Length: 213
Figure 1 (cartoon, rainbow, N blue to C red):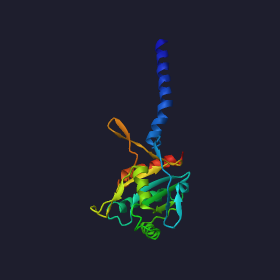
Figure 2 (figure 1 turned 30 degrees about the horizontal axis):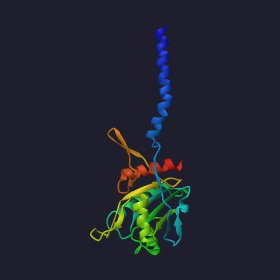
Figure 3 (figure 1 turned 135 degrees about the horizontal axis):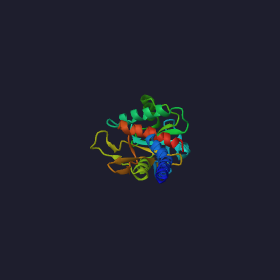
Figure 4 (figure 1 turned 135 degrees about the vertical axis):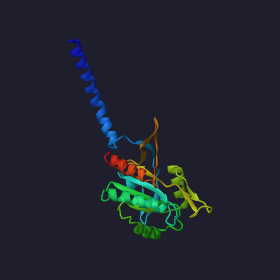
C-alpha cells in the first residue's frame, strides 16, 4: 500500500511540474518569452519624405523600428535597408507596425532626396517614414535619446559614423529587446544588428510578440 501511495505521490508531482513547466517551455521555444523593457523614446518631431511633420504621435499604439542612416552611405546603410525591406514584407499591411529611418546627414537628405531613396529601396509601407530635420536635434535624439552614436567624421568613408543597429519600440513607446544566452548567462541585447541575418530573424519573432501585447 505504501508503495502504491509513493507512485501516486510521484505521479502527482510530475503532473504539477508539467502543468507549470510545459507551457513555459513551449512559450520559450516559440519565441514568446517576455521581452526586456528599457527607457521610453523621447519626444521628437521631424519631417518625412512627403514633407509631413512626424512625431511620436504617428507611432502611437504601434510597434515600430528606428534606424539612423544616410542616403549617400557607401558602407553599411544599403545592407541595413535591404534587411529593413525584408521586415517590411513580413508585416506589410499590418496597420500596427511601422518604421522610422532617420537621416544623420540632413543637409543633403532633404525630403525630396529621401523620397527618391525610399522608392529606389522598395520602401512602400504606409507607416515607414524617412525623416530629416535639424542636425542638432537628430544627433541629440540618437546620442542622448537612444545612446546610439551618430556623428560627422571626415576621416571615414562617407563622412559620417553611426551604428548598424535597429531599435525595437513597443506600442507604449518603450525600447524593447530579448535576452541572449552566453554560456550560463543571459544578457539583454537592447539593440538588434541590422547587418546580421540571425538578428533580423530575432527581430521578426520579437515584433510578433509585441504586436500581441
